[in-house]
Length: 213
Image (cartoon, rainbow, N blue to C red; front, side, top):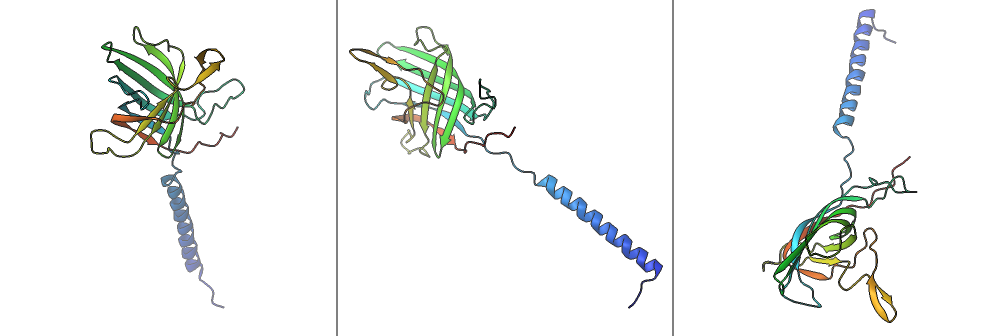
């Protein structure tokens, strides 16, 4: 069996050491360059006017949404992690009453958002109402959105919205006039009202796993 001279043995050992060192550096660099991406967050954005299919009139009703998921960001009693549907953002409501020539507006802070492909349901607690507007301040309202894609080419869109008042969320009271129920987080009907101008964009993301303790 051939043997290496002391000089050649030292050279081979030096080469192997350099190779191992470079390999380790390359692996570490790759781990840094390819860090795991952050999960995508759900959102719904846009502004649009819509009509009531069951009661068409000359009123102009519109909603503006700028909402984004913020999972597990709002601890609750007994639920210290918060919920996967926690969210942040704003909702703006505008209703022009044609018969009176008056516009009432309201603004709210988003507290819940859940999405599916092209659909979203969100709720917001109203923080501001214009003088003479509805008694909404401090109350939670529910909204739903259908993002039906691109504009239909006729100045409108195929998007739709729904909301938790007017013809739903009623509590029958026997022979008495029904009352409106309190709206829970992310509670809203299907998007039943067709958009007539503007539109919405829904970015869907799956609800994330409960964080580990």
